[in-house]
Picture 1 (cartoon, rainbow, N blue to C red):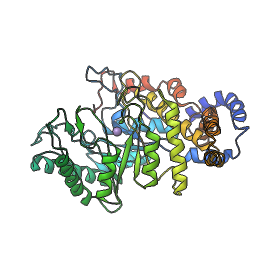
Picture 2 (spheres, rainbow, N blue to C red):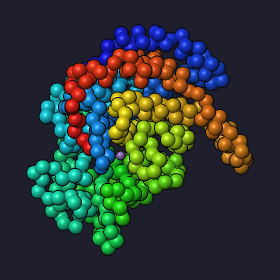
Picture 3 (cartoon, rainbow, N blue to C red):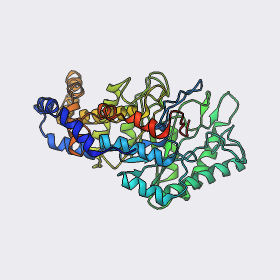
Picture 4 (cartoon, helix red, strand yellow):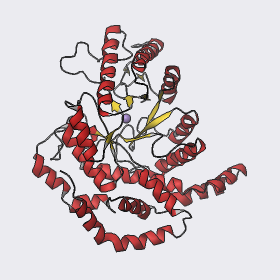
Amino acid sequence: MQINKNLIADANQQQLKAHQRRLSLATEDIDDVETVLQKLSSFNIAIPSWALGTGGTRFGRFSGGGEPRTLEEKLEDVGVIHALNQSSNAISLHIPWDIPDNAASIRALASQLGLHFDAVNSNTFQDQAGQKHSYKFGSLHHVDKEVRKQAVAHNVEVIKYGKDLGSTALSVWLSDGSNFPGQLNFREAFQNTLESLQEIYSALPDDWKIWVEYKPYEPNFYSTTIGDWGQSYLLANKLGPKASTLVDLGHHLNGTNIEQIVSILLMEGKLAGFHFNDSKYGDDDLTVGSINPYQLFLIFNELVEGMDARNMNHATDIGWMIDASHNVKDPIEDLLQSVQAIKIAYTQALLVDKTALKDAQQDNDVVLAQEILQQAYRTDVRPLVAEASYRTGGALDPVTVFRQLKGRENLIKERGLKTVATGL
Ligand SMILES: [Mn+2]
C-alpha cells in the first residue's frame, strides 16, 4: 500500500485553519522560527524492520492483522510512515529476519519510496535452523572458539548484505552474559568479546562504522558481558575510530542518568547513535515519550548542546533509530507517535536559551537554570512540528490522517487478517 499525496493534502486542507491559528500563537515568542523549522524538516529517524509487526512478550503474541509478510511489505509500511510524517526516510534491517533475496530490486523499491538503509543489525541471540553451534551460552564471548568463529562469520555476512543495500553501519547487540555467579570468568568473556569484535572490525569496509550496544540484564540475569556504557566505551576505544557506543534508552537500570552518559560519550566522539523507546521498569520498549517525556527532553538538550559544541550536523552525524515493540497498538500508529515525540523533544531542546543557561551555570544560579530548561520544555511546540511536516509534503497530524485514510483497514484488505511479520 502506498499513500496518495493528494489525500494527505486534502486532509491537511481540513485542518489548515486551526493549524495556522495555533502556529501563530506558538511562534509569537520564538526568535528564529525559520531556523527551527529547517532543522526539524531535515531531522529523520530510522524505523526498524522488526517494529512493523505486532510485538510479543514471552507470554503471548496477539497479531493485529495486515502485518507485513515480506521485506518488500516492510519497506512499504515505512514508506507509509514517511509519506505521513516526512521524517522517517530510512529503515534498519535485522539479519537473518530480513535477508534481501534481490538487493537491486529492494534498493529500487526503497528509493521509489524515498527511503535508504540505515544500520544493519546482526542476531546471535537466537539459534537459526541449520546452524552448527548453539548460542545458548553466548556468541562473541563464548568459551568455545568454534562458536565465536561462527558468530563472527554471521556478522561479516550481515556487513555483506548491508553493503549490497548501501548501508554503512553494523550495530551489534549481544545477549551474551551469565545467569548465575560462577558461570563465567568476566575477564575472559570480555577478552573473547574484544577479540571477536576485532575480527568483525577488520572486515568493515572503509566507510563503515560498528556500533556497540549495551544492556545491563535480560536475557541473562546475573551478568551481561557488554552491560553498560563503560564496557561498550572500553571496547569501542580498543577497537578504533570506526567503533562507537550505541545508546538504547531502555537498556539502563532504573534511575540511571542517561543524559549525563550521552553528554560524556558525545564529548569523546564516541556516541554512535540512539535506539529510542520509553520504559517504566526495564527494557519495556514502549512508545517514545509515553512514560517520561521530560527525560527525553533532557537527553535532547544534551544532544543539541554537545553536537553544537563539536559543530556536528544534528540530522546526519548521529544514527537516530527507534527500537520499540508494541503488543497492543497498531505498529504504524505507534511508530508515528514515537517519531512525533522525538521531534517534539528535539524542538524543545532547540528552544533552550543556551546563553542564559550558560550564564546561570556560571553564577551557580540553580533556580534560574531550572527555569530556563523548563521554559523550553513547557512550550507547546506541536504546531512547529506540524508545520515542518506540512511544508515538506507530510501530514499536519500523521496519526489522524492514517486513520482517516483507513490505513490499517486497507492493509488488512491487501494482506489479510492472519499475517505474521518475521521478528520477535
Ligand atoms: Mn536496541
